[in-house]
Image 1 (cartoon, rainbow, N blue to C red):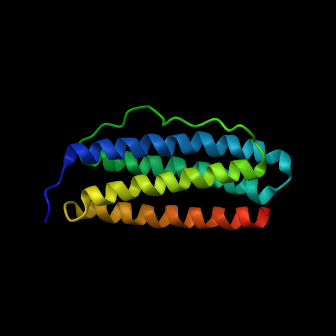
Image 2 (cartoon, rainbow, N blue to C red; image 1 turned 90 degrees about the vertical axis):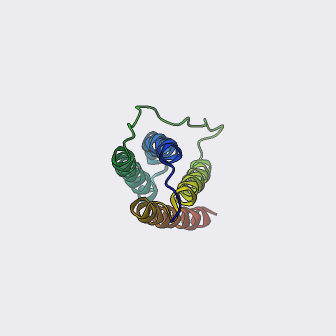
Length: 144
């Protein structure tokens, strides 16, 4: 078994915590923008993603506390879009999910064989984020 690097894990968890909170803001905003498109399934998708990002941030915060870290009340920066077409916000959402997946993968690599509880948690999160990406890819394809 590898040595658990608590400091690195705390830093990565904090980064993911902030990123998931930014997802709440991003997806809430996008649900409002998409509302004008009369595409209720997309509006509902963004609302669900906002709720899920909040839930993910809470779960990550709990894991952070479990390793004696303290969640800081910050959110990751959210890039401003040049255009708010439905396709643009869908593509920005896909980029966000890819980045989330990457962050979870870095955390998984950091805890692999050193903390089985966090490793299991992160593996589940990677599965969820992968599903979100696939949903977005399909929705983007449907727009084309």
